[in-house]
Amino acid sequence: MLEIIVLIYVCRKMSKEAATKGLSKTRWILLTILNWFFTELIAVYLTLNVLHIENLWVYVLAWPLSGYLGFLLTEKMLQMQPDMKK
Image (tube, rainbow, N blue to C red; front, side, top):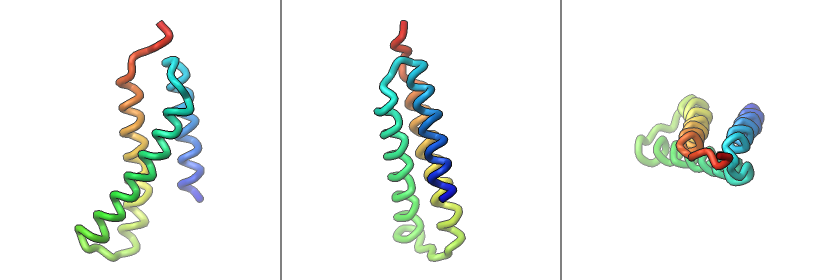
């Protein structure tokens, strides 16, 4: 539940930043959600299949941190975009 609240906050932040650059808010919200989701899937795959870790605490820490990593990647991509308002 907390993760959903954080994801909503992050999407609003990305929406505002995209609007200030004159870019599509919807595109950047979707990219944020997709990056969040896929980095979580990658973290689960790595912990289960590559590292062979089956400890609950690893999941408790890895899922939110990997989701946040997805947000950071999307934020960096947005910051690299040129301003379209000029």
